[in-house]
Length: 330
Image (tube, rainbow, N blue to C red):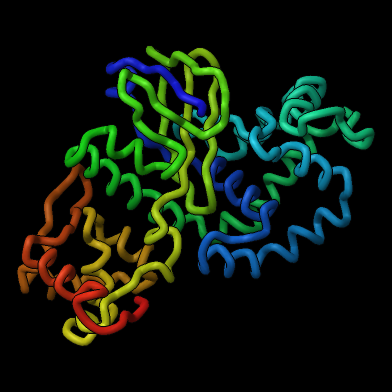
């Protein structure tokens, strides 16, 4: 397994960050895989996979570049740089484009691994990679970025609340189940590959959520390290929000869906993004739930966050599968 050694100060300074580039690269990985992890991803693939495959069919060199760069256990470093906070996607793409061609080819030999195909022994690989990432952003991510961003924000809010409840170990264990795990003795398992351990004490550790697929790890030694992880299925996949049938009958399916989501604090705008309901509808549902004592609200900075009360917890658990009839999907 691959693991990082880090001291208490590094963990205490670690933070979450949102990245349009990471979202774009995660979308490229999903397009490359061609198979979704849940119905939401499958629907997205049905919409965008034909265009992506047509693009690569017309450009065999870029198709080979993708196959070589997205290796089974290693990603070519130049394809996935870690953006700085607030860095526009265009600047990150410029960084990809500015990669020295010899360095790009060396990265591909590591991710492949093995000898580079003759078609990739050329100097325009960084330009091709940047152009492909620009396509993925423009055609498949940017049209829905506002909603995706709110979903990612909701994930960060939920995990930040988890820190206060269970500490950083609980959060790190949940980022990529089966891969990330707090091992104790200041050790963090970051994947299941047999890579040499790295001491990242004193470095910057960033946790970056993405909505598609599985994540990856990245570093710029010795100062910056990142764990990119898929946000929770309930948020990423609209079809994953199961609402107990009895709760749907009692409250209405849409209102019950809001209550089910509030096991972790969320703002009104985040609920709008995750449920797909209008702002007015979500606001009315929250008012009814507040008046009934099933949810509570508190201010966190500029946001007002809603979460279930003890009464709301009891109601949801009492209606959970195993305690009543079948379920509806919200």
